[in-house]
Image (cartoon, rainbow, N blue to C red; front, side, top):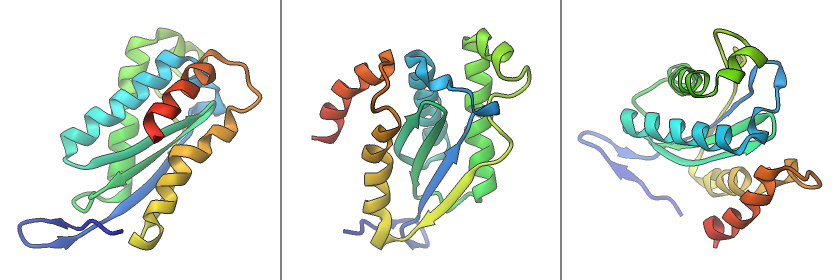
Length: 156
């Protein structure tokens, strides 16, 4: 079901799926604190930009974001804002990430992007929120064990 947003001179909706990867495909998100802080930084920056972060989910070595109502920004701007803001915070709070990944950056230079229409928005949100668990199955990492309990809370 579409939920359109009314702006001063427009009416509609826009969804965007972005996927980011840490430099050298490091498994940075095995650390639950790094994962949670990345999610927090994405949330803060989204609120600052006036867009809606519908979902931010992680595999051990990548993350997916699902954004809504981003009409005032280009895709490269959004990627730059989210990656730059989170990279600075993560490298400040977790000095070991500067040594393990790269002194001046956390994320790879590239990213995946996909605009999503209203027909597929619900399916994309489902993929990002639920289907990312496949990357953690069979892995006995603390973040997976902790997040299994969170999944029940988030999706029910």
